[in-house]
Amino acid sequence: MFTKKNILRLTCLLLISSWNAGLYAAEIDFLKELDAEADEIISKKASPVAGSSSNNSSATQVNPSAEPALTEEQKKNKNEFESALRNQLPGTYKLYMRLNHEQRLVVVETYITNDRKMAVATRQLFNMYFNE
Image 1: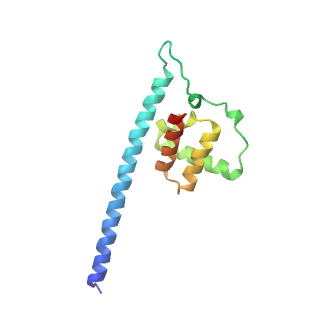
Image 2: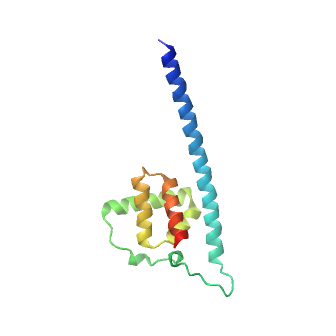
Image 3: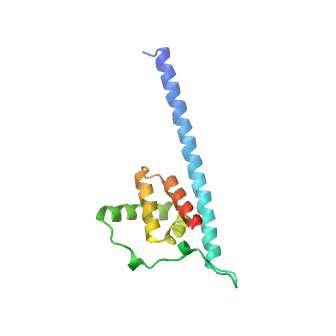
């Protein structure tokens, strides 16, 4: 029943499982650190220093009524992503809300096409926010 080959397979499976769990925990910790930094950035931008101005066009809040028409599927995906982001990473959600609508849709699409992995979507979000 328990041959050497089966024991070796079971051992490999257990090692891979524990390795994946460690990677997932590290990813969550990294996202929480980024979220704290995002919250700090938003706080600093909310209270501008006298005489300074922000030239970052993506950092301005966009009028929600100017949002382009979305399909039902896009609306569902957008609501799902925004709810997950708001609950898991509220500081990062604040940065997300400062992107324009097209950028937000790219982030949502990234989230959906990458098996709903928040790490991939937030990486896209930060790249868009800081590269503008």
